[in-house]
Amino acid sequence: MDKSQNNHKHPTFSFTIGGKSLALDYPRAFALGDQLLQSGHVKTARAIFESIGKTPHRGPRAQIMLALCQARLNEFAACFTTLAAAFEDDKQSISENLHSALVFQKLGFRSDAIDTLGKLVTQFAGLPTVCLLLGDLFAVQGDHGKASDCWTMALKRDRLQGGVALAARRRLKSTQTVGPVLASEARSK
Image (cartoon, rainbow, N blue to C red; front, side):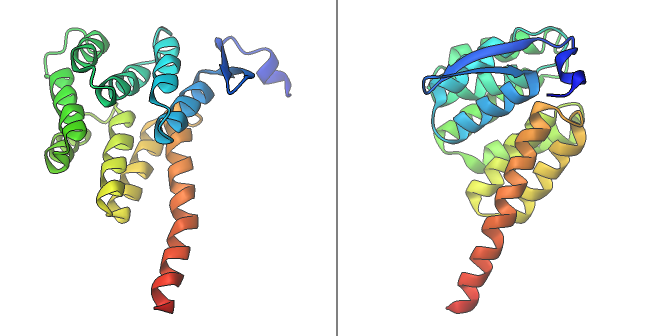
C-alpha cells in the first residue's frame, strides 16, 4: 500500500460481504454497492449506500443510489424521503423528477424514465449518478451506443477516482468485452 493511502484523511468504511471483512474508502464502497445492486443484491447494496450516504460533503451520489435500491424494493415513500433529503432547498424539482424516473423504471415505464432522466442529465451536469442510471436504462433497452455515451459522460462528470467514475469504467469495460463477442457471433450467423 502506498503512503498516500496510509495517510489519507478520508473515512474508511467497514463491511462484511460473504463472510469477508472489507475496509474501503468512499469511492470503492460506492463501486461495491453499485456492483452488488447490479448483481441483484439490493438489500446489501442498500445497507452500503445508507452507510456511505451519511458522509458529509460528498454530494447526492450515494443518496441517489440508495433511492434506487429503495425503489427496487418497492419502498417508494422511503425513496421519496431519501431524495428530498438529498436535495434540500430543491427549487428545480430535481428530487421529484428523479423520484418519478425511479418509480417509472420500477413499474416498467422505461421510455418515461429515460425521458425524465435525459432532461435531468441535460439540465444538471453536477449529477454524474443520473448519467450512470440513464446509461443502464439504455443498456436494458439494447441501445449500447447510447448506454456507453451516458457512462462516458458519468465518468467525465465525476471526480477522477470517484465512485460513479469507478462504476462507469466497469460498465464500459464490460461492454468492450461483450461487444466484440456479440459482433463475432453476428458474423458467424
